[in-house]
Amino acid sequence: MAIVKLNNKAVSNATAFGSITGLGSMVFIKKLTASSSATLSFVDGTDGVVLDDTYKEYYFTFNNIHAATDAAEFTFNMSVDSGSNYNVTKTTTVFYAYHTESDSAAALAYDGNIDLAQSTDFQILMENLGNGNDENGSGNLTIFNPSSTTFVKHFLSRGMRNGSADYAVDYHVAGYGNTTSAVDAIRFQMSSGNIDAGDICLYGIA
Image (tube, rainbow, N blue to C red):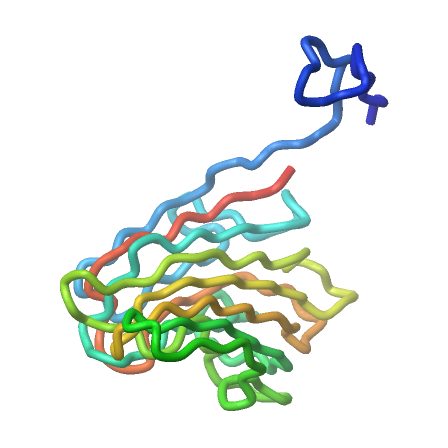
């Protein structure tokens, strides 16, 4: 990448930058929109979905995810057999910050209740989503090099939701799928009930 040179010492006052090359791009691949949907699944090679070695990093955004069932969890899992099974073994770590609408409580804490230790369960990305008309959750999930047949599959997620008990929670989830098989499908679903509304977009990072 070329060195960026400013025409003065302060970025805030800069009027020109040198050439910038090789910064890459975020390429839109697919958008799925929920409408009382049990699952939203991205399967490599299906209806334009790409999850192969075209990109080394894949980025999902989930927007205005609304639960049909109050206090449900928004979850995901991976597949190595084109979506026949979503049961990749995962080890993860989770922490969150929260603040109540009433200003009565706030905290930053490790969440040992939803992390996984060599488990094939769906990983919770956001807990206790409310199903009120004004309650939902949004965030993102990054999966690194899912098509690798050499290394495990690392991922990071951050999600923000308005919960069933009227408080805001900022979730941070990280871990890895403990498989050296290529991950070729990703599924999102609620722990109970449907995804009432919302959309999930998939991008490749070039």
